[in-house]
Image 1 (cartoon, rainbow, N blue to C red):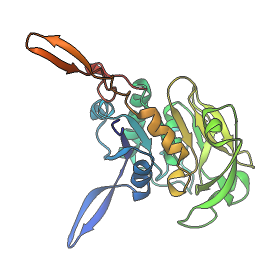
Image 2 (cartoon, helix red, strand yellow; image 1 turned 90 degrees about the vertical axis):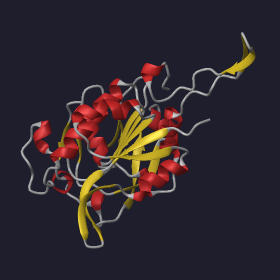
Image 3 (tube, one colour; image 1 turned 30 degrees about the vertical axis):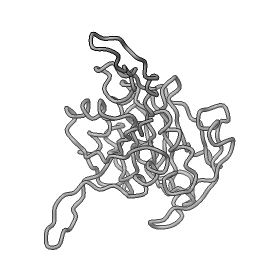
Image 4 (tube, rainbow, N blue to C red; image 1 turned 180 degrees about the horizontal axis):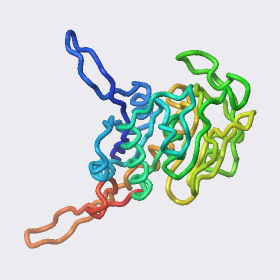
Length: 266
């Protein structure tokens, strides 16, 4: 069975090649390695203009929205907090269009960290811009530039709960979080202080957003679930078909990446 093609969102940053400095598409290697280990084929997606998004979505079996800088508060009708990052308008515009197109195409989506915030804002939700101010502690970002482990409580009847159980210990570091879930999104995990840790879009499609970073740990169940949901349907068993020159094999549909070609996504 073919390994599904999983798109991983990247970010544009200045990078050095010897004396050359050029804008580059960057993505932490942990995402690529986690998708590979989970059974998928990773491909990094650059922030392209919205008119190119439909072509990208048609070429993918699944989508991984990654972590990164804060979503522009203007996009959820809020004034910027002094702790909120300067906006990356190009990436915001791209990822909002991308996740909306993916959902419309029934593409499996896993949104991590910032990706959860993009998913929520795309559905009309809002964000807490500075958690230490909102909850009175720094437990969600205990150290600079490193993940810390904390427990999350899950709805055992949710897709995420059926994967991970009623409680999980996860690697995380974030100073923002979901405030009001967007249209159709259901809260399925909370920290002990009631900060929202995960959202799902109920229905037959696989759309899950988590506040933590499964790619930074050893538990691949969530990445494996994305890959399983994105795996093209198995090719039908080869059957002999008569033609004027004898017998040849005809294979059924393989599922996958181009709906216009009669393929099927799971």
